[in-house]
Length: 166
Image (tube, rainbow, N blue to C red; front, side):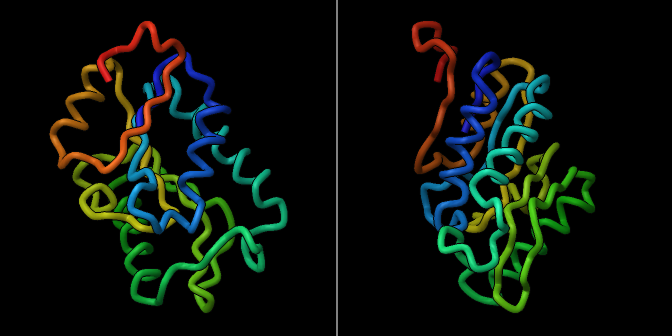
């Protein structure tokens, strides 16, 4: 998923949050990561947090619109991915309270993610969204092309007539 500079961070966050949180991101075409211009990372994080609060104003537990992680094994695996990212100096933002007994993992943003982190090495299948940054569109294109081809690519651009190569 790539967000072009100038695209509304609020609009991108709304669309990404929906795709990320439907079925707690336990679908094969859910976004694995977001590439955002370095100058827009904090604005995206704020917009994403605001969107999630609007989607779940009373929290996740008991919400008919939010689901639990499949089982304890996957719940623990997701927490290991998050812990690894924190250990490697990512800024981890937990967007609510977890309920381990129910395998309920609140959405998590992993800012300043790097390719070396486990969260970028494995399929996530959970509500954990790594956010990586780029300065120039060529960096984002190269990053995507250096990895196995994704099942889906979501590109948010301000003006389709001025596409940057996606």
